[in-house]
Length: 284
View 1 (cartoon, rainbow, N blue to C red):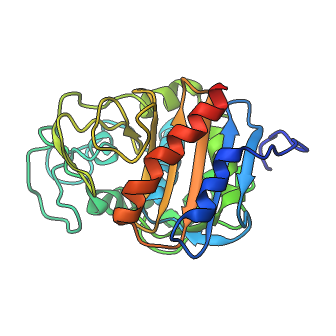
View 2: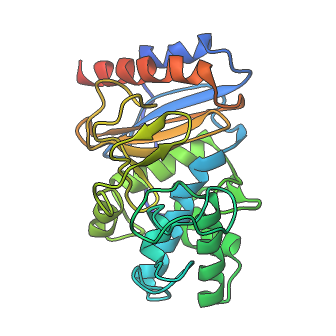
View 3: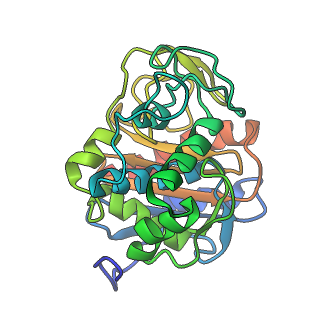
């Protein structure tokens, strides 16, 4: 049964969203979602299915957190390399390498962004529940939220495909949780293992490289894919297929952008001023 989200909300124009029309991206869609679940503005083909790339990770993390609340797994149970836990895997502190199950550090000592860690996480949940991770994710997150065009077609780290309409529903859920207890979402969007340094892909070494449980935490990182005016409390994720999702509690809003051009210098140039323009319009 789908969660009870607001319907019939009038979609405002939000002039700042027109900026995506000038981006060097073949197909792009964007939306701003208020904390009450209403859509403040939307632009582009909202039903088009995009490769989400690493925006898959917050979706996968949400499913794991549902499993934690259901008692199928525990955050501090062993998972991954020796000494690592489910919490370490979610927070990119398991010590696993970026794209292979090779241990590079003692768990909890470095922030190593790891696709392999999320793949191990998926395998761990499968073993605990007896349900393929893609099915668990669909049953725990996609179906209840009515995300009918989203599916996981491979790795829990990067292989979801979905639409703007669906990600809007997820952005509304994170801001006003119905599938999770709000305290669990606050935990996921707070820094896990504070003070750890690491590389933020595409943006270089960050000291510290703060992360929650499946969500990256903005804090004082520079350079960064969000805006100069983004709150330090902002959190979210971006993907290498030109996608991102941020939630800014201070702005009481979230923004989803989905595109079909690989991340590169174009994105580092246009994403921050876009976010700043969205935040300025929301504040105005």
